[in-house]
Image (tube, rainbow, N blue to C red; front, side, top):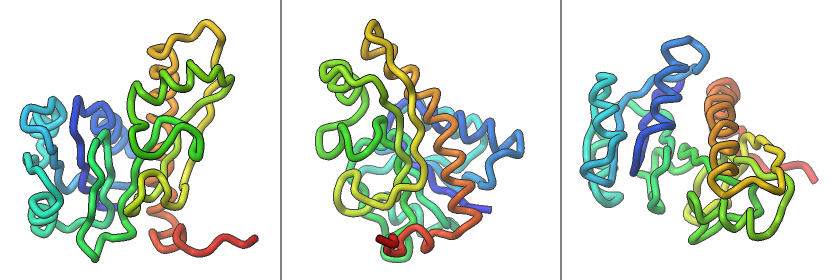
Length: 193
């Protein structure tokens, strides 16, 4: 079972998903601590209501000081909108979810609705989400799970966002379960060419 630290910046919809799946027994993880870099983030209030230790901290040093007080196997970025630098012991154990199929529509400046507006503007017929390990470069760590969603010509960026978030609710728990089964290091091995 993976003991997770959840980092968030906003509403906590991904935390809701984790909480529901842990309660249902379909996510092989527990939430050890929740940290938000926004003091009034709704996700922080949700975490407290769920009974998770929950803190506001800005900056990597402050976050890492909190994480040092908890047993954590995996840091999951759940709508955390900063580049996170973990402590050395967790350097390879940070998972992120991105609202597109990496390597498309990713990198600095591509997050949230910016991604979905770019997808709409380009006219692509398939989008989706990618769960990947995070490193010091946006969206470049090893990929764990990707899910596709079909797009219709009439889909607005908000329609695309809703379809992608539904896929994220399946992909993130699947990725965490895969990491729990195989171990973090298995995903950092060089891929056979």
